[in-house]
Length: 343
Image (cartoon, rainbow, N blue to C red):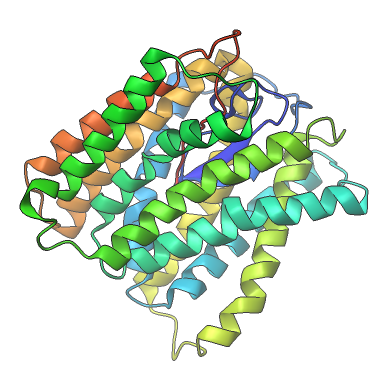
């Protein structure tokens, strides 16, 4: 449910800090450069941390749903970003990281924070007012598809191959399957679904922007990521009072959900991602992307009691198959900047 990007990498899914979804990835949606943070070999086996990362990002959609039961969507996003920023701020202090320098770098980080944090996080929170968390998690899995389509237009070094074009077509066929197109989209909330898909589209827009503007900034991944989350928090803090009123109270479960969403899914997950990429490489680390919609679906059904028809899991598998095909190498040996999200 979060997304980290290395502008100088061949692909967001092959970056120094990875490019995995999100919160929704997510991915907390973070922008980093090629200056990776040196990471000591952790005590826990990488497979355990890989599984933890998949669970954290997979459960993010459930946590969003629970959070919106007690707070307005913008408040959920603000709490999430505050918690995530706090975790990375502590990590920066421990590692004695310096903040990025230069007004231009901060300006680019502000744009990245909007497309990779403030906008998609808010859209997913608004979407889950009217759609199940399972559907939100599957929509999040379309980020690589949007990313490949955009990269063919925005990145001149990317060239379509038959395999990648087939993956794009297959992936969107899976989306139509999930949405039940043959039934005329009966029972589908168009507004909520559109917001979830727009959130997934926002991630690759941010990744491509980062790749074009922040390569070689000289700052570490952690410093850029923490600064980006801080700017995203500031953006949402300015907007939230304009569209929401102060909550009457702080209900326990929604509050815990929002704090966990930020501290785990937007803070700890990024640190786990750093370590995985350093230890096993970006190709293996990015495979966590394909577990997220599966976990999100299982969590929504098992914990929230959401209904699941046959076309939802079938369509999700087709989406993931298409996304996997789009990650094939582009002509010229460079991968597409297609990425993959988390909320």
